[in-house]
Image (cartoon, rainbow, N blue to C red):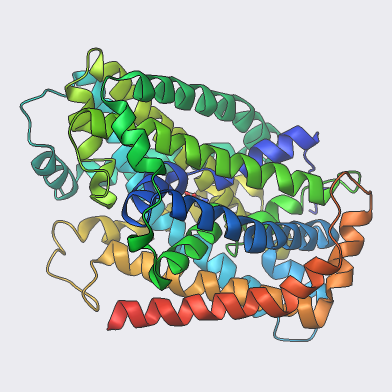
Length: 446
Ligand code: PHE
């Protein structure tokens, strides 16, 4: 039985869904510490520069591929380039999405469990480093939260594009903005927060290097959910009446705004409470509970923070699950409900070793990385940039930039992309991505 393809019922529905995919742990948890460690205001500027130079054109490209073909990533390449190996680019992105979701859900499970902990209350005397290690090295609890998180994603995806994704993001995205604003106001009004703002926005040239640029480009890709099939898939549910260039601009701008606001929510609060905002990935799970523990009504704000992270993670996770489900539904004619359940369950299983890498399998190391970081490395540092580069080459030299320009002109919107786009997609973007792949590998293995 072939069902009619669903479509977003409005541009707003699409923008919220795509922004939901883009805004995730990457904005709220990763961006502030990247800023802290990579040059403050300089990082912000370099990041925005690459969001415009690479992120925006790639966003327009992926949405155009999706809307033109009305197919999942593999089907999209098959239909634009039949009888060629280009479908492998789609396969690579479905694979990357699959792997990313399997460990993204583990980290999302941590946020759910911290949310539950916040209800019990964070207390000032606790050692949060110990608490975090104790949490992740428990073999059972994180798996239970990973399961809870995957079940939430499965429920939404099994309800379909309009009744599941669109309906849920219309509730979750406004909630996300409100929670974030609450935390920004709280953060910047703490006494001592000025120093934090100064730190966040101070330009520190001495921290800027090739490494900074590499991080900024990688963050632009990850943060916009590019090269993982998510935007091709969401674009495939866009009606022919919608303008692609304008919608893409909204997504990129909102994504940048959330990242910048997350910096205002987190960095001043950490400063005001005497923490170190450059401490790295432990920022959310170690520094933040400590910060909230010292604050009046700290448990409430702690709850708000981890709820915010959980919502952000869920609106991203559903876009990854949808990539895999759309492929099986489109190409294999499977029913949506059964597929969501089966795909979600397999992703849950694949995630298990990544979680156990901190307990039973803690002696396993692959090139010095634990299992979760290995998944992250394979997907984020290899599959993702390679997929992005090949997508740019595909458009630049096979499908042709004019085809994307045509899509964005029908119908025409306020924003127009033109000759600049062709130049960027053919020459600049593939070369820059190749550079980050090489720099990334050198950095990992030196
Ligand atoms: N963009 C999400 C974030 O910033 C991560 C993500 C990547 C989500 C790819 C979906 C697809 O956290």
